[in-house]
Image 1: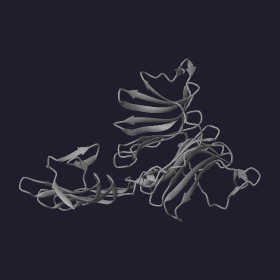
Image 2: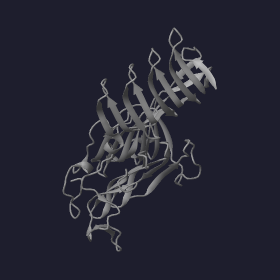
Image 3: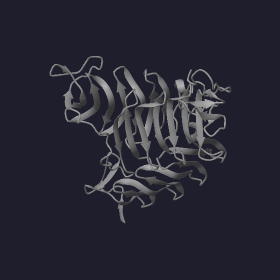
Image 4: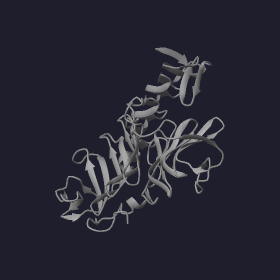
Length: 379
């Protein structure tokens, strides 16, 4: 393993990645005080923080200890004050999102203790376990029934009895209608999307256990799949799984876009993929149909995907996401087919929920009396 000093002029950080003599760095980087006291030791693999990370106070007492996985905090991180007292303990999933956090004051008194993963899951008080014997499927039309009546509300699945939530689904009049959210057993995201009367629409995403994107699907409002992409857990594209169809026309455009006005090409409403540029910088990519945004939209910042979702001619539909530069989710907005917000969530840089969730789907989050027979849970 190569060992270098953080002050080495040949070590350069670019876009969150370490390069040494122009090559992605693999090895250990130490930060030293003028008296050569080591205060930090970080491990890199192929330019990314990966492996053990340790820090020390100037008097050589431990300051922090934890692990990275390709630039993301994972597993357990601990922090100590200069007196050696533990002041913080964080547990992250393999996606780099905070699961649990505990904090102590200087006297050693516990001041903060919360389950970040559970807080971020929009579980309603009225949710019904998907395995409940009261739930059944109507053999004639496939609708979900509660005590023989079409079910309206939220269902929940647990990893095991008394364990973490691994799936949430909303229903209206027996039909799957609203967000569908799934997690791996350790709390890492597994899938997310939206439905209307049992039909998926908008953007659906699936994640590998390590947090990398596994699959991206785009559905029309009628439930027709119009795009499918898949990737391995190392981020390589899986060849041969894209939705078949004729190649779409691509147009490069520089200028101001007005989505309220039909986009024309050679005097005709444009159908295809519009790449919006500012000079050599790609700003966004949007699918168009008959002159108006209708399909996948991807916005870029600093060469990274910043925002992604599906537009219809009348506005955003399905789940939309904002991302941190390392690919972790910063924000999620799920819309219904009329562009009403069903669910809105935001996460801080640690992956903890940043503000209270909001949206039509969780208005009944704190209701104590479930309504299984009539009226949407979001109303």
